Image 1: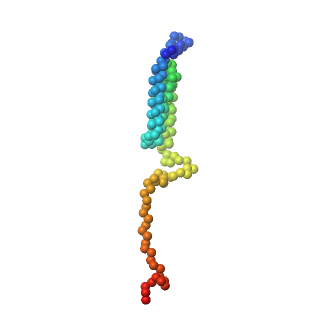
Image 2 (image 1 turned 90 degrees about the vertical axis):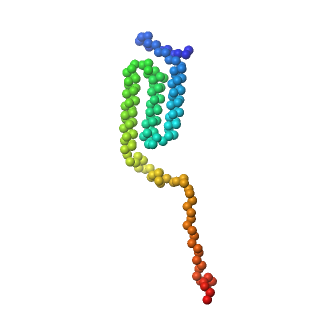
Image 3 (image 1 turned 120 degrees about the vertical axis):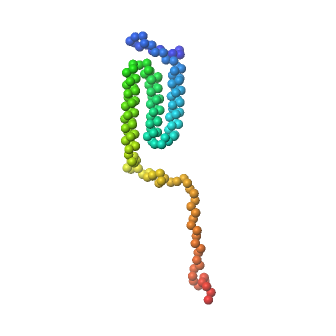
Length: 149
């Protein structure tokens, strides 16, 4: 059977769900997963920007799952409002955390033992440094090496 029908106990409310619709959502979720992996390998300038982009993509994917696979679109509108408001509150709270983390000068723990800065990291540029020119050796002064009398 190509459709799934659901009848609620309180009335004649029927929802038809086609497998093609689920397939489209699955393809969209797979494309968003590829975008997530690609975005994780790109530096967008700051760690906060990377987090915001990753969380935005994850929120879109979670919303698609909730709307279509969990049938939120067929449910009462108040449930959709609760879902959207929870996403907005989560975004506000995470936004405060990002602002707090960005306002600090050094976010490394006090027990951090790694390099202090980028300049302290070893360089991969290994151009050989020329050795200083050797001074000519002077002949030792003594019995055999001096001027003739």
